[in-house]
Length: 113
Image (tube, helix red, strand yellow):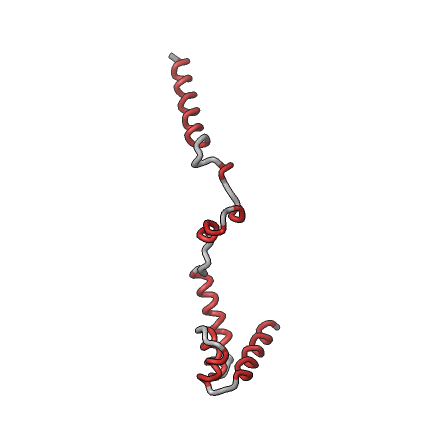
């Protein structure tokens, strides 16, 4: 009887191991690097949208960046952020394109230092 019980226990362990480690579903040799996948599949696996935390950080930084700016500079930056071209921003605000470029360039340089 003891041999029989031992044999049942061994079979149960063996079946469990075969189920957990012998199936293709859990086979670690099936793993592939994303770089080796075809471009159309790899593109679907990568999330390009920012996380909620990244959005919150960006909004806070944007507000901090705009705080010391004048109303005109703030409007230039907001229009550019909405996707307007430099020409459209200049026409909307009644200033020259060079002025818009200079403001953006000045802010870019001051933020880098």
